[in-house]
Image (cartoon, rainbow over all chains, first blue to last red; front, side, top):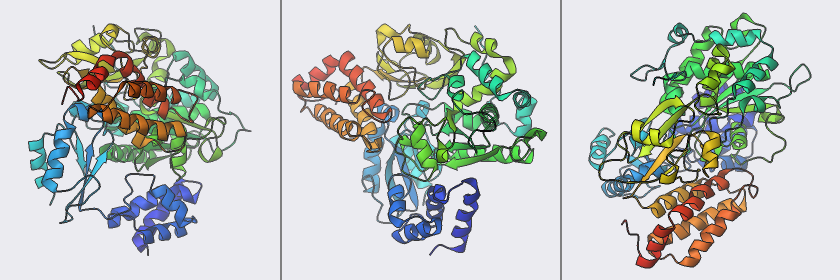
Length: 154
Length: 425
């Protein structure tokens, strides 16, 4: 069930659009902000609130890579694998991250601290390679500086 | 030579956003007053005369785009104006700078665009990863509402304009004009059939204009200084300044506002400081991932829409990705095609099937398993993905770096075949 707070936040988005369905992506992001991910139950609850079928909403959910349909760790690492970062050393970062965290792309560490995901170009190519952890952007990253950065996320 | 930098001259050195008051101190929101006093058609005419072309990649003339929107009391309502701030073209980092550094400039541009097409509702469509930009745009919108510049009877006129920030949830397709409209309607960002064009039937079936951030940011300056001034900023027939950028192994990667038509040589040698020590220049994607490679023979091309196209590529977003001699061109194109295959929305067969096929062949080359038949297959796939075979420009864009790599780096593909490995690994 949606919490009163989630419901209130979703309903606050409604006046910005002439149709209820237009709010569905915002709604899933609101739930994700509170719970970390969007479960099947949340899909059903949001769909009901917005007058959509759960299948339709899931079709939307699965299109967008930043809607998490599986639980994620406390911190989501988005590692840019697009062309400028690839030229500037993405592969070394990727190898170091996988080794250090013991996970591949799409996986969460066993202590639920980190989820590692690839991301398309983060638009900071003059400071490649780049990654995001949660809402924080990190640029000009080297394998060694990355080790240090990770320490700040417990 | 000093040249005017209307888009970036007021930016703070530390990159903090200008507040509404600071923006007004440097002349901000002056041009809206002017636009509100003008007939909407005259605003469009002025923008048409200025020669402004879309900065998102396609270079479509802005005034001409607006001229298809139904105007007057019988036009369908509400009409929409959307700022496309979904910057996701690999190698592109220009709109981020405008959004973070001067969000009010964008809002003012949107107000002018809204005036020209008589739009009552506007959205900033922002990619989710631009967190700082999101905060600053939201702050700017709040400031503009409390000053009475947005909402009912803006600037004391009889006009209303609601402006909202929509933060997206990922996917390159959302930057495609009609994919963006579907995303804003809460759907999968598949492209739509055209016609009808969005100018006639766009968001929620109403007349809609979608415009890139840099395009909109130019509007206040065009209104303030006129069409002739805007044309005089350029070194070529395509008007204005351009935010150019460079990434890759140059000495000083960066972003610069320069006269439209600045040569690639000047961008590379002067502004980027040349290649890093010990590296040689091999080629460049002049305007993002979906533009054809250019090489040494093109260094003196004036980087505007017309001249870059004559050279066999596109200006695109104007942010170059530089290829050096110690980076494998086949590996680079493999990375690009993997991106495009992943980001294909799956709507059109040449795109979802062809691009993944091309990506797999390129991967085989990198493992030393490519052969000459594969080269023919790659050429064949680029022809399937040519314009006209798909609903949107994703597949044709994906074909551009591949077809030009096959042309300019054929020897490197052959080395992979003959040596049965990637010579760079």
